[in-house]
Length: 445
Image (cartoon, rainbow, N blue to C red):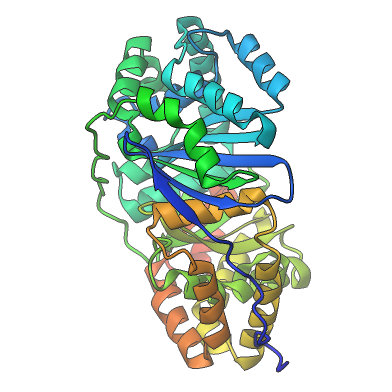
C-alpha cells in the first residue's frame, strides 16, 4: 500500500442502524451488537444551558443533579441499591446543548432497567434538602473553577469569541448569585416546561433488537406526555477584536495558561472533518508540532495541544498550554508562528503521516458500545447520514495537499484568533509588551 493512503479493503464496516419512534414523539436510533450481554443507551433531551432563563443560570444543571437524588418512590440510597441489584448504572447530566440520561444495563435486565429509568425521568423526588446541599456543592465548584487558570482562560476565550452576555459565554454551573436565586419551585417548573419527548432522542447499542426495544419502552411511550416546547435561540454579544493578546491577571502564579482560540464549526459543517484532519499534525497530543516544539524542544511545558470542539452552537478551535511564567513571551511567539505558518509548513509528508495515523485510529475507534452510542448520537443530533464515518474515511483517503492547505487557510488563520494569557501581570505584562506582539489588553475577571 502506498504510504499515507487507505488500503482497498474497508477498514470500518458501518453496522446496520435501525430506527423507530414512540407514539409520544421520541425518536430511537439503534445498533444490535450481540457480542456481550450488555446494552448501553443515552436519552438526549435538547436544551441544557440553552434553556436557562436570564438570572437563573445553572437551573438545568441543578435540575439534572437533583434527578439523581431519588424518585417519588425511592430515596437516593434505595435508588442506588435498585441499580446495584440490576447491575445497572443510570445517571442524568446537563451540558451546554442538552440533558443526557446515560444508562448501562445487562441485556437480561433491560426491561427492568428501562422501568427504573422511566421512574427517574417521570417521578423525580425533587427534595428541598438535597437541593440545598447541591447548591452549596455547585457554588464550591464555581469557586474552584474561578481559581483554575485553565477554566479562567476558557471562560475568557468564550466571552471574547461569542461576546459578553452571550448564552455561550456562560457556565453550565451558573454564578453564585444565580444559584442562590433558584428555588425548588423553579426546579419543578423548569422540569415541567422542558422535559418533553418531543425534544428527546434515544441512542442505543448492544444485545437488543428493535422489537425488544419497542416492547420494553411501551410504558414510557404511554406515560411520558408530550409538552409543546422549543429551545430558545442562542443570544450572541459583540465579539472582541481578533489578532490581539488578552491578559488576565492571576497574581503570584508561577505559570501562565495560554489559549489561542476562535469560533469553530458545527459537527455537520462540511469543513469540520477536513479541519480535524489538518489539525492532527498541528496539535493532536504528542503527535503534534505544538507538543514537539513547546515540550520536547524547549521544555516550556508538560503538554500542548489543539482541537476543534464541536456542538451545534458551541463550536471553537483552541490551541493551549500551561508554560513556566518566565517563558510566556517566547511561548506566545511560538503559538503565533506555528499556527500562522502552518499553511506553508504543511507538506505531502505531513499529509501522508496524518492519513496513516488517523486511518489506524479510525479502524479501532468503534469497538466499544459507548463509541457506537456516540456515533448514533452524532447521526441523530446533527441529522447525518448513517454512513457518515465511511464518508469521513473517504474524505481522509481523497484529501490532496492543495485541499489541505485550503482548509488550513479557511479555518486556521491566526489573525482571526484571540490569544488569552492567564498569568502574573506584575512579572509578565511588560515582557509580553516588549516582545513585539502588540500591546496586551488587560481583561478584568
